[in-house]
Structure formats: structure tokens, C-alpha cells
Image (tube, rainbow, N blue to C red):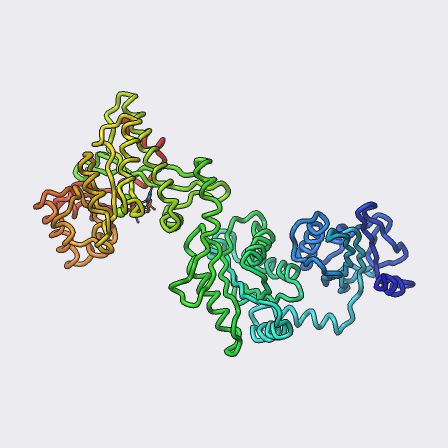
Length: 551
Ligand code: C2E
Ligand code: MG
Ligand code: MG
């Protein structure tokens, strides 16, 4: 190997260079014992991995990531070291025999057979002042101080490689402010510096990274297909998450780079929009920008990859929120609300996954699962000789286009031998939904109580009350919050309640959070409420203990 010869020539007689060899058959071997590079090092046993002890503390994380990349490459795991790369380098300050910090490049040559690494040659090489200067520039370059330079460098790479496709990946730490609040400024900023150090090592020669603001980073990267971008994200997650055991998520927005006549910036902005579109959803970590933001297709992949297994593993859990009688605060029923208890992720609220399930149809299976959980609980109460409280279940609109879901419900009540009065049905009314009338008629024929969910939000209107088949309206919390405070709003709530009463509809006010709201509702004639003022949704066991067993 010509390179190797050059390397040995270079090293001959030098005292400031260290060389180490690793081979799959023999492991580590230090080749040069004479070099006095490191203070007090035992060269006969030194390996690349020991070098960390001689690295400057500010360079240690960079170095450690470099090592873990090499280890992964040795183990055949995916790394950012591309399949054919021959040499990788990282600049690190090492403690010299003279007790000073000297910038070295740690160069590692990789020899492969059939794509797996069989030998590595590592050589440290002191850098000259010009190179050190370059490192400092690069450091500035990768901070927020010099976005123009980053763009310029990226443009150069893109123009030099017309055969490659490129994308902008922008990411930030979700709820970074909470990390700041919980761990303080020093730790938060150390964490972001660790990000920079990590990116420095992870990014290969075709990738340009930069820090745009405190916790926002960007990588301009080549890609082959969508999967290759997901692979990059996996790699980033693997190395960036869990700094000092802190729990956080990273959210990614991606935009493919196309026509460059108007520069790169528009693609960065688009990636930012994609990222922001999923910021508040704890389950979505990747969004791709596609032309028009409205068509921004959020990456539901994570949810879709996990949902079936979650159902099998019983990760969906029924929570119950009491419905209370306002005058005496007595619990008179409950609503079943799903939670996804995801291992390693905590409790995920339905707004983060129900919309995805509604899109991909999985909601049908998940709903049925929760309905069955509700039926089981009612059965359990009956078996214990307790008169059950009615539980209302949510029926997604996805079910309503045909009546087969009614058969599912019927099978459940038959299987668990439950009087239908204990299972109530919540449906969000939407104008002009086809098939809904037929479904409702069937439900009524079977004898279920129907609740119109979220009344006052979206499409449901006073008009729908006129010839409705619903028995009860659930007054939406937005209705309550926004209106109750103003005089006019109060009148609307008042009259809605009056009118519902007139036509014989039952009512539940949702989202009651304080005493004033409860009193106001009671004065208007609405006596049932559900909301944090009374209780938050809770696991069924807790509900049992609080309201059933000890009542
Ligand atoms: P929803 O059916 O209107 O349920 C009421 C939501 O309001 C619940 O949110 C509940 O936790 C919340 N809430 C109750 N009281 C208060 C309050 O005082 N203040 C505030 N700010 N919020 C309150 P949750 O559990 O996050 O559910 C959100 C929505 O997800 C539900 O709205 C429902 O549309 C859907 N969902 C929940 N579970 C299921 C399910 O099993 N199947 C289907 N298809 N949808 C479900
Ligand atoms: Mg509901
Ligand atoms: Mg509601």
C-alpha cells in the first residue's frame, strides 16, 4: 500500500507522532515505541481508545464520538463512515511530553475486505499553525456566526456533484426551554456544544452542518432516497440523544433541494416550517416539506411502525374522566379516553396519535379495543354486585360511513352481557357526513344513548339540534372558555342551554376548570359537568378506588 509506505517514511525518526495498528486477527499493536508524543504514556500497550485520556477536555466528546464511530464500523454497524472511505480524521489537542496541548490530527486509514474492516492504521500528526488556524475558522463557520459561509460551502459541494441529490435537514430540541429551566444554563449550553462536537465528527465530506440559533441546527446532506434520510436521522438520534442522561426529543424538518437559482435559503426556510409543524406532537419527529405547506406530509412513520405492536402489547390504556353532578359534585358517569403508554416515551395523549390513526384507518381497531376495555370494566362492576356508572366511549368518524361498527358494539354488549344503558356513545357531529344518519338510526334502534361531542366547536351548530337523533350535547370547552368571560358569550351559553332544555336534550359541559364556570352553568340550568375542576382523566384502577369501591 503506497500510502502506508509514505506513512512509515513520514514517521521514521519523528518524536511527535504516534502510530497504532489494529487488525481483525490480532487486535491492537503499537508500531512505534520511540515516539514521545504523549506525556507519561505507556506506548507498548497504548490503543487508539486510550488516547482519550490525553485529549483536551473540550475535545473529548468529539474524540469519543470518533471512537464510537470507528467501533461501530469495526462491528459492522451503520456509521457515517461511508462504505468506501479510506481515511478519516479528527483534530484533537493532545497532552504532549512537554506538558503542553498540541493540536494533532488523528488520522485513521481503513482497510476493507468485502466491505468489512480488517485493518486500521492510526497515526497522530501534529498540525502546523496554518492548519490550526483553519480549525478555528471552521469552528466559527459552524456556529451561528457565519451562515453565509456555510451556504457557500454547501453550494460548492452541490455544484461539484451534479450526480448527487441533496436535502436540508433542520432540527432542534423539543421543549428546550424546559431543559434550560430544569438543568440550568450551563448544562443546556454544554449540551448544545456537545451537539456541535458530535456533528463535527458525524458529518462526512459531503455534508455541511451549522448551528443556526441556540438549539437549531442544520445539515445539508446528499441522499439517495427517503430511507437514507431516515437512516441519517437514526444516526443523529443515536449520538445526540441522552446527553448526561437528560431526556429530550429532537424534531427534524426536511426539505429536498431542487432548483438553486434563488439560492439555498428558501430550502432552509421550508425545512424550518416542516419542523415547526410537528413541534407540539410528541410522537412525530420527522416532517418533510412538500411544496405547499398545507400538503406538508408529516412523517407518520414512527406511529405507523409502532401501532400494531402497541395494540398487541396492550400499550393502549383506557383512562376514565368522571362526569359530575354540579349541585352536589357526585360522580354520575365517566368518559373513556385512550392513552398510549409507550415504553421509554411515557404517556402519550390521544391528540398526538388519534389523527394519524384516523388517517390510516387504524382507529377502527384501536377504538374497538377501548370499547372492549369499557365493557370489561362494566362487567367487572356488575360481577362485584355494584350498579355500574355509565361509561361513554368515543366513536371516531371513520366508523360512521357504514353501520358495521354497530355490529361490533352489539357483539361486545352481548359477549359481556351489558345493559346498553351503561354504554353511551360519543360522536362528533359534522355537517353533511354521508352515512351518519343511518348509523345513528341503528344505534338508536339498539337503544344506546347518543352524545354529540364537542358541541359548539367546528361544524356542529344550533341547526343540527333541530332534527337531531342525539340525546345529549357535550358543550365544548372552547365554547365555554372563550365565551363565558364576555357578556355576550354568557348569553350564548345561556340560550343554548335553555334551548337544549326546551327540546328535551341532556347536557354535559366539558372542560370545566373552575368554580365560577360550574356555578354559571348551574345557574343556566346545566347540571352535569366534566373537567379538571372535578378530576382529570385517570387510569381505570384509580377511578375504581376513588369513586366505586370507597363510595
Ligand atoms: P373529547 O372526546 O372531547 O375528550 C375530552 C377531552 O378534554 C379529553 O382530552 C380531556 O382530557 C379533556 N379535558 C377534560 N376536562 C378538561 C378541562 O377541564 N380542561 C381541559 N383543557 N381539557 C379537559 P384527551 O383525553 O386528550 O382527548 C382528546 C380527544 O381525543 C378527545 O376529545 C377525543 O376526541 C379523542 N379521543 C380520546 N380517546 C379516544 C378514543 O378512545 N377513541 C377516539 N376515536 N377518540 C378518542
Ligand atoms: Mg369525547
Ligand atoms: Mg369533547
